[in-house]
Amino acid sequence: MLRLRGDNAAARTFLSEENIMPIALLVEDHPMNRKLFRDILAFEFEVVEAESAEVARDRLQSCTPDLILMDLQLPGMDGLTYTRELKADVKTADIPVVAVSAHAMTQDIEAARAAGCVTTLPSPSPTTLSSCWNAWSSWRHRNQESGIKEAFTFRAKRST
Image (cartoon, rainbow, N blue to C red):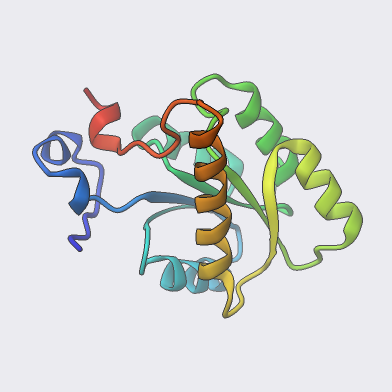
């Protein structure tokens, strides 16, 4: 599978869908966790990183991810507040958000779901890739079956 880096939308329009990886926006402030997530997710996703909600807003100006991994404890705006903001925006409301937390207690999981997250994962673990992929695939499948438009569209289609 061809892996592409950067935001060259024009080049992407010439590539077939089979060669474009889904994009994951990783919103995580801890550098080591970002590296671990990036290394795990890079097998199945093109990973775009942001260390805060404010930086994630900037990243969303130049890319439309297929999945967002959101740390719940971010500096500045926390992950739950930013998730609510994303879900309230027509442009980002349909993007599945997976909450990530080192302290995923029952109340954190419930709060994340109430904010619009599809699931909650512990901070980087050996099962992270599998869990992210399964959560995203399940979300995609549910939306396709319910008649909602294709949930997984590639950036090449979006840029036209």
